[in-house]
Image (cartoon, rainbow, N blue to C red; front, side, top):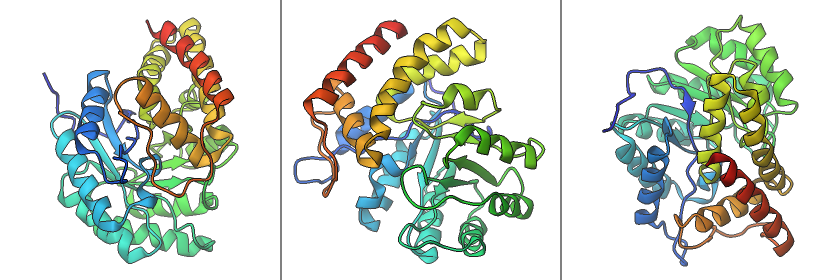
Length: 307
C-alpha cells in the first residue's frame, strides 16, 4: 500500500538517485525504475535528483526527461526533489518551472560553479528561482566538493523574503555541524535544514535539529536504520550503524564527487540493482582494487548490523 506525502512538509530520509547508464551513456530507464522502487520498498520518504545523479553531465533536455520520469514514479509514494541549479539564472528558472509543472514536491539548486559570485548575486540567483515556483526551494551549498560557500547573510535574506515554508536549506560547507547550528540559531529555529554529507555527519547533525537527510541511494537501508535509531534514542545501535557508514563515506569523500559516484555505483551493482558501474565521462578518479577491498569489508559490516 502506498502513502501520499504530497501535503506534508518535506522531511525524513530522501536518497539522491544514482543515474544508471548503458555502455553508450544513454539512461537505463528500466534500471532507474528498479532503483526508485527499491528506495520506497526499504522505507525512503522520497527521492531526489541532484549532484550524484550526474545532472551536471547531462544536457538540459535529458535533465528534463529525468525529472519527469522521477516525479512520475514517485507520485503517490513520497516526495520528489529535483535539482535545478545551472550556470545561468534563466536556465535554472526554466528547470524549476518544468519540475514544478511535472509534480515535484520541491526544487533544489546549487549556485553556478563556473564563477565565484559576490553574496548579493548569489542571493539574487536563488531569489529569481524562488519567485518562479510556488513549491519549496532548497538552497544547497555544495562547497564540500564543488563551488564556494554561501554566506549566512544570504540564507537569512532569502528566509526573510520568502518565509520558512518556501525556503529550505542544505548547507554543506565545512565545518558542517557548527555552520548548521549558526543557521539554526540565527533563525531562532525557523530554518528547515537537510543534512547532505552522505551520512558521515548524520548523527551530529540530527542532534542539531535537522529536518531530514539526503544520502546516496547506495547506503539507503543503513541510513534509514540509523535515522530510526536516532529517533528512538538508541545510542548503542546508533554507533553500531554509524561507524561503517562513516568509514564508507570517508572513502568517498577522499576523492570528491567522482569518489562518491564511483563507489556508489559499485555498491549499487554489488546489491544487484545496477547491471554496471558506467559513469558519464570524463571522470577524474576510478575505484582501485585496494579501496574496493576496504569498501567490501565496511559494506559487509554494515549489512550484518542492519540484519
